[in-house]
Amino acid sequence: MLDIATKPAVNGIDLQALEETVEAIGQDPGLAIVGFRVTTEWKGQTRSETTVQGFTLGGNHIARDFTITADEPCELLGTNTAPNPQELLMSAVNACMMVGYVAQASVRGITLDSCTIETEGELDLRGFLGLDDDVPPGYRQVNYVVRLEGDGTPEQYEEIHRAVMATSPNYFNMARPIQMNGRLA
Image 1 (cartoon, rainbow, N blue to C red):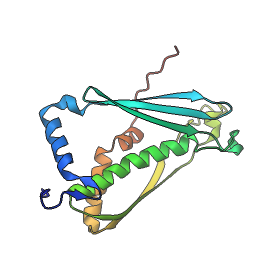
Image 2 (spheres, helix red, strand yellow):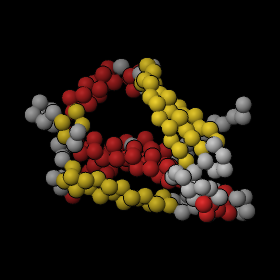
Image 3 (cartoon, rainbow, N blue to C red):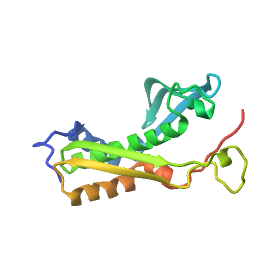
Image 4 (cartoon, helix red, strand yellow):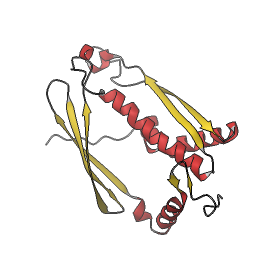
């Protein structure tokens, strides 16, 4: 185990705070429950705005205030004023995995000089447009490449990569079906 007294922060991650969080959750699993909620409003044509007003952590509400804008490119009937939902989806997956790569490197005492994730996928619009029932409206596969540079070895980077695939919430969400419970109010 990394001696956090001699190396209090790696890659900007406060290892003492991380250790304290892990210990607290180990003692009270209720502290591990995190709830997220967003509200999205149509803003005309293909544009929407999503507001983030907070989240819950261990039953406590933590206020936040962010707006996320989405739009489609002109070629897909939008006004090209913001990333489209697919780009935001890939961005969210990458950002979640990025936290994992940095944290996994940090707890191993590996200093990163850079971490880059490139993600791509192709959709067949016939599924979205309802033109062919045999064509799914979503991705059949998503490909990504991770580049890690720092003072770690190739073996350590492979270990980190496996750990991220095993623990990243958004990797999990994309790699396995999620039950969606929608209702019209």
